[in-house]
Image (cartoon, rainbow, N blue to C red; front, side, top):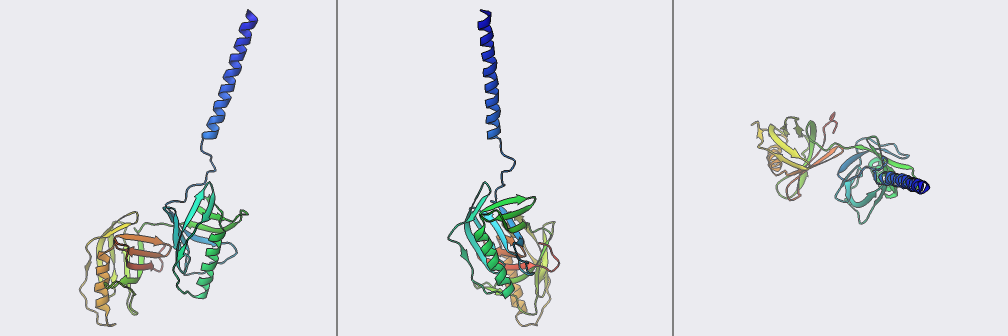
Length: 270
């Protein structure tokens, strides 16, 4: 009788140990791994290095991931394409689209090498704060730094504005249009002749510019300065969204039309 009790007790102890081991294994399998690669969705990046390539100044390729698409600038043209990224794997999809501007040779070559690197990318990893794209053999083809998307504390030079006749035109030679977004929600700048002040509110990609007040100086030279100023200030009233990529900023209306294009002011760190 005693031996039967001993065998039952031993069996119970063995079963308990097996259940405990099974539970530990199950917990380990279900726990999130420390090496899980973070998602790319809703992140923005600027190119910091390209395998085998010295980056020229004056142009910075960018990537912004949102809603299953990656978009940005290749340094010369804007691009957009679907992508897949999961468990460290990465690949661009098709169809992709791109503008077709001509650029100076160093920038054209950079754009070509950047697009080739994206086409070869088959994996990604996050090293500290950097995004690294890898080819099928695991070699790094491009490295990116995080791109700030906020506007507070940034300063910009206007490169183009909507003239109110469904066209975005370049800033006239001999004039300078600027915008500075202050950390306290104030806006200031130059409209080409007069300085202006106002306010802004920004949340995500949404941007609202409040009433703008300008000084009342008259500038007769170069011809058309005052007409340009009036059109630019009117364009600011239509702004509904902002998209910041590298050294470039686009302000758009609620319908998606361009209101103004800007580049980072000299000495500013966007």
